[in-house]
Image (cartoon, rainbow, N blue to C red; front, side, top):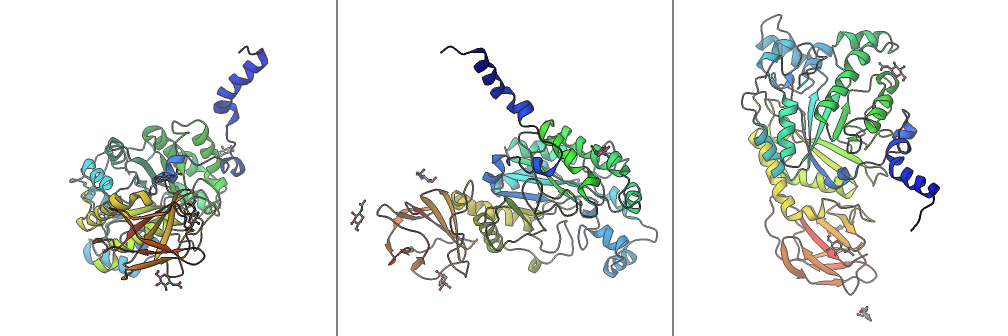
Length: 452
Ligand SMILES: *[C@@H]1O[C@H](CO)[C@@H](O)[C@H](O)[C@H]1NC(C)=O
Ligand SMILES: *[C@@H]1O[C@H](CO)[C@@H](O)[C@H](O)[C@H]1NC(C)=O
Ligand SMILES: *[C@@H]1O[C@H](CO)[C@@H](O)[C@H](O)[C@H]1NC(C)=O
Ligand SMILES: *[C@@H]1O[C@H](CO)[C@@H](O)[C@H](O)[C@H]1NC(C)=O
């Protein structure tokens, strides 16, 4: 076929303009919010969050240790210090004891992979301001010049990527006690010295150096996005950065942004919507329900057990979310065996039931009834998964929502034999359950092929 000159230039433009001029984002929310979320993120569904920093050294109360001690003067933190440390001991004195001497990134990555997670998000810098890499803007408040004397962000990243998991980085925009930040704050955020000298150069360094697949922004809420220059940063990230096509971001980019602007929505920590949100979201949750960082004073009763974790994961995926489950390693670099056991338990469940989780879409209804015993996910128009999150203790399970047809086939994942079922009067069916195989997670999946 012969092409005219103008057809030819149109074709060339379609091929190249889209990736250069056509799809450039401008530094405003209308443009940035129109960017489609890179597809990998919705498919992976399950990730591991890792909170690790100098707060892992006192390992008491919470990763907000410094703030509770010196900012809020909470009595249990003040007393903990008075009782156990000499007068004049400062938070920065904890850093040399952040040894990470047992940190084996491959061992961590093996555990994360065994959990069935497809992405891992590490705190590159929490609100204490200590960077887990040799940030050029961090004086000696970083893991290369101080503490472990190691590039923690880089070393974990290599191990994660060797296993084809996605690597994300958490970054706190604010730093509680950074004098430059505090000076901007006292000026009512009319000056941007901290953003110019610290926040933005550091974030840019992180992106250029480690090419994260995901940026989990936090610590934004005291100042507007115009103080952080969030839209300028995101426009660079989406247009010109080395990760412009794959990077996924969350929604914490300035006061009032969360649940409204950015990539996917985190909204508040542990966000638990009551119905299907109309925007991709993520629930972050910690195995230790009282802290994201490791704390030596945790009790077993304060931890999520496996059935509770699986229920939470299933609920989240049924409502279209991703589940980011947190563990806090010790300052020695160990993932406590109790956390490891939880993670391996999730992986064992996903080995059988992962088909009902990964790359699924929310179905036309999300749950069977008000008891929330059965949650639904779907693969395509005719395959629906009914995930039972507690043993129904009966031989027949009524599902009122699926519309069956003559070709409907019901199976229990992990069990090759199709199950007997009979239709209910108008829509729905009753399934004859086999004896349910033992499941430490207390959750089983019925696959319904040929339903609507
Ligand atoms: C923030 O963006 C504005 C507008 O582009 C620019 O004038 C200003 O210099 C930026 N501030 C920093 C700290 O980058
Ligand atoms: C919800 O489903 C369970 C199990 O199928 C059933 O026992 C219960 O009666 C149902 N509740 C309602 C309100 O329909
Ligand atoms: C729907 O997905 C299931 C599971 O992946 C597959 O077995 C089935 O063939 C698919 N059906 C259609 C119509 O694509
Ligand atoms: C489905 O079953 C009904 C009755 O059981 C029958 O009348 C109908 O012809 C069947 N349809 C097909 C497509 O086989």
